[in-house]
Length: 140
Image (cartoon, rainbow, N blue to C red; front, side, top):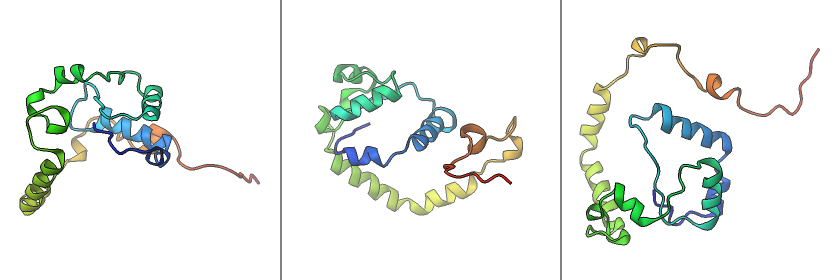
């Protein structure tokens, strides 16, 4: 994950509860199994925040990154032979726009039958408790 351009203002907008939900989604609900995270261009304050939240994300050596991601597929900004990130971003956006209708058709065809899911359904209140704050509680 490239954190280039992230500022303290971005961090201030993320609440702990939202981060907890996001990390739960990544670990339990995402369609992929995460083995680890690799961050590049980390600013000093982000390193401290990430260290508090996820101790397994300590790797900050680019050589370790190349063990998992071949340098031959990286853009020029990260020492690879591929075009720059901005150019790659434009290519992906263009492909998405060109294939928009096909993607919408694909999404409509693929649905999940929740009745076939084993176990009790999980919802946010079961996993994280009740959201909000309780400043005043009147009991009669």
